[in-house]
Amino acid sequence: MEHSFNVNKAGTALLVGVLCWTVYAISSTDTDFVTGLSHHLAEISEILFFLLGAMTIVELIDSHDGFDIITEKITTTNKRYLLIIVSLIAFILSAVLDNLTTAIVMATVVKKLIPEKTDRYYFLGLVIISANAGGCFSPIGDVTTTMLWVANKLTPSTIITHLFLPSLVCMIVPLSLSMMKIKGHVVPFKIEKKESAISSKEKTLIFALGLACLLFVPIFKTITHLPPYMGILFGLGVMWVVTELLHKRKDEFEKGKFSVVNAITKTDVPSVLFFLGILLAVACLQEIHVLQNTATLLNNNIGDLKIISVIIGLLSAIVDNVPLLAATMGMYDFPTDDHFWQMIAYATGTGGSVLIIGSAAGVAVMGIEHISFSWYFKNISWLAFVGYIAGFFIYYIQNLIIT
Image 1 (cartoon, rainbow, N blue to C red):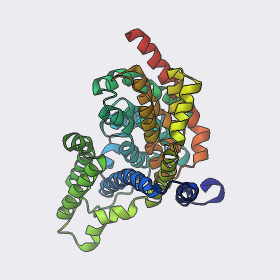
Image 2: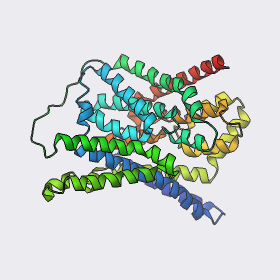
Image 3: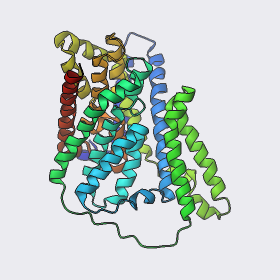
Image 4: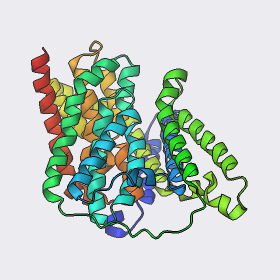
């Protein structure tokens, strides 16, 4: 609707989310639906606060020109080489951080490297695929693998050893196909040298501290067992204190440009509201057992766990992979490290790349760069689908060899 009628997607998503719950409230005989809504809102809020915290930290690094440290190291203007570098960075970084944070960071980096909008969209499409693939083979890289790890369905060693190769292929195949289309050289931004209020040491400090705060989130979660949004808020608090102390001698005007308050005003709040609307709608589907019934229907009518895994992964591109995985975990009772859980981890981790709204990374990039759903569907979805199927094929071959 945003593309066709110029209606901001946040408004449409909020209408859909609220209307779903309104229809459910009016038609339901269960008077306890408010409790269910409150439960889902608590889970949704965790994601939104994480997203706001991560986006603010990234904006803070950007306001201090911190990402110049990365872009200055990338000297090639060849689009193909640049695409390889960007995809590999997203793939590796996602395994260490997570796919959502990586997508936010890489969207900022790509914006500095690629001036032309269409080329930038292709690069960001590969960033989404690479970030989701990279997060899939790490127990802390994606919320789905974390859920399976916490529920003792998979161990970290199994996740890494069994899913690394399929995830790598899931990234390499779309990358290879994209290189057939991407040609030529980028025209770098014309950088006008001007005096900056930020010294080289301050830039390096904020960049290093910002990345350290993002990297600390999974460590914080492991140590405290608190949800990730607490770690990101802790990191934001640290950044807030450090930047205030760093710029305390500057005048109010200069200090304001580098403050967290200014960074917050630059975050894409409509995208956060879009996320809220979409997740409210998906939560309603979960509350009325549509997702659980779909999983049961697949089990009863198909039976083959390999095919079911593929379908569940594709369904995760339409609805959120978290409730879909939760429903799947409730349906099956396979032992720890069973092949089914490995397939489900890969499927729900990478299947969301097929649609831009199918993953947190896609939604974040969609909000930051305003990529339309239809553009992504026409240009990137088929690449993500081919990579998704190729990764599954490699997993099956790998499984045959190992067993």
